[in-house]
Image 1 (spheres, rainbow, N blue to C red):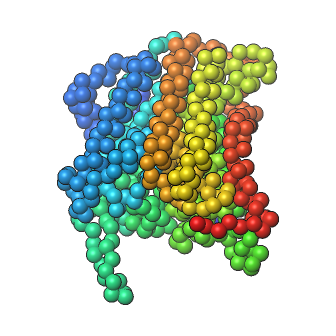
Image 2 (tube, rainbow, N blue to C red; image 1 turned 90 degrees about the horizontal axis):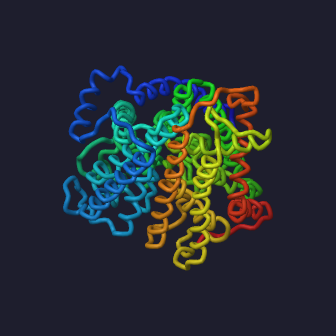
Image 3 (spheres, rainbow, N blue to C red; image 1 turned 45 degrees about the horizontal axis):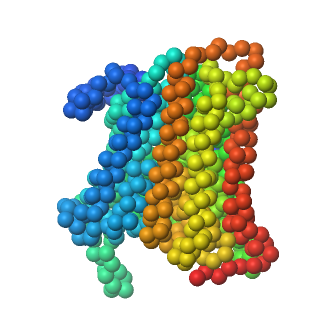
Amino acid sequence: MTIIGWVQILLFCVIIIAITPILGAYMTRVFSGERTLLSPILRPIEVAIYKVAGVNEQSEQHAVTYTVGMLLFHVGGFLILYALMRWQQWLPFNPTEQSAVAPDLSFNTSVSFITNTNWQNYGGESTMSYLVQMLGLTHQNYLSAATGIALAMALIRGFARHSVRTVGNFWVDMTRCTLYILIPICMPYALFLVWQGIPQTLGPYVDATTLEGAKQTIAIGPVASQIAIKMLGTNGGGFFNANAAHPFENPTALSNYVQMISIFALGAALTNVFGRMVGNQRQGWAILSVMGVLFITGVSFCYWAEAHGNDALNALGLTGGNMEGKEVRFGIIGSALFAVITTAASCGAVNAMHDSFTALGGMIPLINIQLGEVIVGGVGAGMYGMLLFVIISIFVAGLMVGRTPEYVGKKIEAKEVKMAMLAILILPLMYLGWTAIAMLVPSAVSAMGNPGPHGFTEVLYAYVSQDGNNGSAFAGLSANTLFYNVSGAVAMFVGRFWMIIPTMAIAGSLAAKKTVPASAGTFPTTGGLFVGLVVGVIVIVGGLTFFPALALGPIVEQLSINAGTLFSAN
């Protein structure tokens, strides 16, 4: 651990705090339909889209209609993406003549990209054509990110409005998010990445001759445009198999740092949007503080674990931290910080192999996802995931003082609490259930790259990542099999949409309620007590849910290392 390492962590936090109100103010104006600096250029395009699509932007939807529209929209996205992969060999922009993707892999990948998970059981440069990468994967990166933000806005309106039956218009929210937020940021962002050294071309792969005289094919393609939205939209899913560790996805220390900032940017800004729309920005800062406490705790522990290294190797005099699976360009701090950010934000992009982290260092990314995608989380999804925990926390506070809990002027009653608990419990039900099943299936067990507790962690991480719509992997698991493709797709679908349905029920219920003025008995929700309560509820609920699984994986692995017991790889 070094001073430079801590400075990088501190600088990252300062930048995120600084840009949060700037982006928050802009996003609030966009979703409120107010004029922005880009309106003279983009407003005519927006109006034309509504006209062609037959959308009345003045007409709002009930929570049920909003949700049904979202689900049907993603059914269409799934079918288009699946067809593109299955027909890939006959479609244009396929310079390497990639063959059709297998049915089970196409099924898994289609579900992965419409759910903002971007889990990849394939190597992008050796499996997907340029057309599929652009029209299929990059396209869905925009739409899945916009969907998460739109759903967060619907829930925020539920808290901000009173005595109404509508929570917005899904088609309008999607259009404005994509047109005014995602595209305007990604265009200059992609150009920055090109400047840093990321290719953006439709030209064929390049053949090169090495110093030894051997021939090597260097994969290139329309990379920068995909990486920009991959990071900003917390999608993950690399153009190349090595993901953000590949020099054509992440060529410099500067690109690495900017990519980390972009992963958190919109998710953090939504906390400010929440504060502005409920009429008290301190509410947004309180939520961001909860996220910050959990993030700083995780990154500090992960950095310490990786800088400390493996005790078994340290005993042999091989000190200096754990550099296994890490890019020398980024070092331990660059890899540890990236790992915590990408799992805290449900992004899934990786610049180091989490499978090679120490037992305790690799446990932190796993915990980040298991907590329910709330430490900033995926764009939008992290915000509504955190608000679910806020509802539970306010309910607990109400029980302590014996009165009906309130939050930002809305009474939190039985329906909201039941829906919040239902949404929270869906995630562990899926990832613990599928992990247990996988441990009983011989073909699933044989796919593990390591024996013992580390192999168990590989499987657990795979389902936690897919169910939590993160997309990162321990990388030791050979998951491109029928069992993992199908079960993983189910986990991704349930983890995304079954959590959304009760969340939208809460949005509709809250929007219909009257605003209750604060009284002397109202629990304050902008101070340290509130922040501590929410952090405590998240940790306690998470601990009771996933500690037994952690005890079988990274915890027992660390205890085995301490006892001098090592497990050889297969």
